[in-house]
Image (cartoon, rainbow, N blue to C red; front, side, top):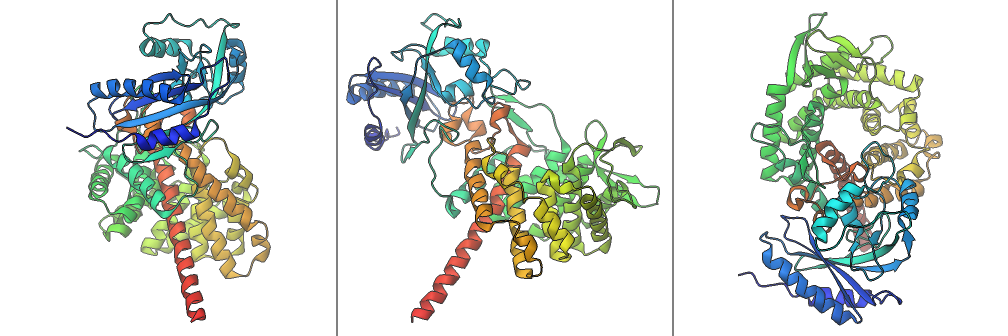
Length: 566
């Protein structure tokens, strides 16, 4: 029988951090949330005139809950209100209408005694304030509210949602205990609900990469296809599939494997690559007599970006595993990309139909073009065939003429970084600077986690480093304040932690184990999809390399300083 963890650490922390509420509210209100990792957290509200009274009541409830849970985790989270104010449903509806969906970050008590109350995590994890993906703002979902209410408070009458009914929105803070360590949690606000991390270090980022990449590896089935994603509030699997995202996710997992080298990832990569090359790629004879290859969707769409990310995955596989078996296939995929490029203007057609290869859609998304040129650069780096470099330079002429830098595309940033390695010319450097120069405030302050912004910053940072070493184009360097750039980069890297399924966040979902360690998109009802996780993962992989570079520079500086002192 497992020995129950010692709660003293948690009790001491909560006692020191929790302060009594003013009258007429109960002096101490503690929310005890318990999960074994298999089921959605069970929650008990403990009230008392003293801290010890509330704590004792809460711990009795915790022991009862834990006796009926069978999973291997003993996650316990304790939250307490820090401020509250009487309001009405009408006033709340007005607030929700001005709040981005899933970004209402307060709890709600239906009475001033906290007999019936819901934490912010409960409200959002049960879609109680989510009106669907067509509503840009939060919305009181009475149906979902009543569903959760009936399971949470089965012995109480359902709430009255009349406009003038008084309710009590409240701010809160808390702590999470995993049986060993107490993690103080961010208070109400944009960072609310997850552990406080003051500075991202190598160990922390490495842990994020392990967790996210192993989550993705667990999604790869024996036939090599991914489980495409989940709606975790109700543990619903996303039934669609997208071969482009299969390939791009495989690329991100290989990036992670290069750092972690875990057998789980290696086996998943092997199955995914085999599926892609065996089942998802077709071959076709082009009018010029060349044989091309295309990544094809289930509806026979050929996407420019699909061929691109297939090359990225195969090129990364070849580099990391020192395996050249797919060289010919990559060249055929590149021929497919060039077939979609106008030989005079450099522009691309975005979507074709297989097997006719007729144009289905001239333009779909700016991302396809960045993916295409980045893939051709990676293939050029691998095989040194000038055809692919010429195609990229032709495309960049089109991008520059049409001011594609205004899109601030992370894929174009990746490509500009690769292109300036081989062609360190002013026009390409200028494009890379234009791609970010007026975008730093957006990077720093965007309310959504928007993980591709970190990718954009990490790729551009490499360009800036090379530009500084080059020394020829100081006017370009002067367009970006280095301190402001670094602050925006760091702020984005930290803000993305709000999209991670830490145990203290996952425990409120219907099946915590399934999404633990992954990343989510809050405004899509905490959706977890392989491509969402992929972009967080690629951003943090690049950020970890950056942290290692910083450590190396600091070590070198200390060594030089030490020698000087001697």
